[in-house]
Length: 201
Length: 213
Image 1 (cartoon, each protein chain N blue to C red):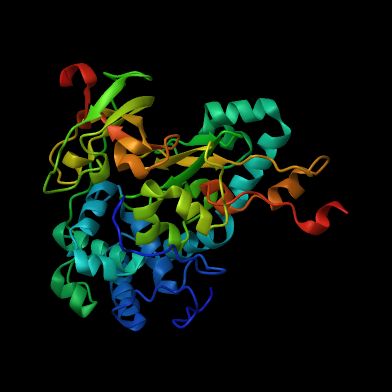
Image 2: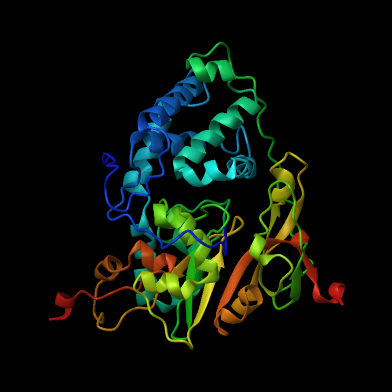
């Protein structure tokens, strides 16, 4: 959503409770107990993003989560649509569990201070490269990971471990002349989102 | 638990369905998962209770207060956030890192997740609704100074505003500046002025007017 216009001022709810209702807490708890067992967090985020845009914006936060949990349980074969409708189980869960593997050693191509350019990627599925940071020049601040590449993991497209970098951009590189000359935005980016400035040249 | 009032000021009103429908769907999902042995009602109660009572911004506030009084701890916190949090006896998950961002006279930090709602919940509890809302997620990166002004933080033009978009499994927490007029305060007193918003970077710790008489 970074940089989109038209959403108005930030509205702060005074003395907001942790959960507004019991069902919000239940949704959070169900997610906590099932993520990493039945589905990966990247898959969960992708299912939320797959909501039709108008519905996504209209729905409350935990309503999106409820939608994602229902969708994932059905897609994984844990619960059938009929069971969801009736609220009664017809048989045991059959969904496959997530297989976890240990992360390999960090193999980082870039180091702090390296000048990088983000790729101009527009995948149809999930990515963690924000739209406002595509095709921009920045500098690596920290090197982290390796983490699984969400673009693949969200679609069960294979486990690809990559270094992840906090990349600093000047505000004017992202937003043009209206931005302050001293402001900066740091974005966490996976290695395959990045090229070195030399590649560019 | 507070009953949600839909006419309450500040409620975004994002409820296309009556809450009872969402409640019914949640109950159906919960009971199916319990029947299938993937969840217990004790799990649900325990997790809700932990978020409501045990995990919250008081953890981050105590960490900040300790860093204010102990320069060595402050250095360790800036160097390795999770290790420094655990040093004070708190749990910090191994799955996510934590970078602590130090506010100085010349650099201000604020945190957002433009893609979803990533947030250092282990030290701050669950994020407020505004943090997860479209206005904050869209504007924090492109017009941070305007957003900060709406929160009551006006920054001089020569202070660099650094916005951290937590788009991966890394997490960020802001270490605010210790305000003037807090000399001799106990850590407990110091922690009491470090709000959640201070550690997101949209507020500054304030010394209450009556504190220094």
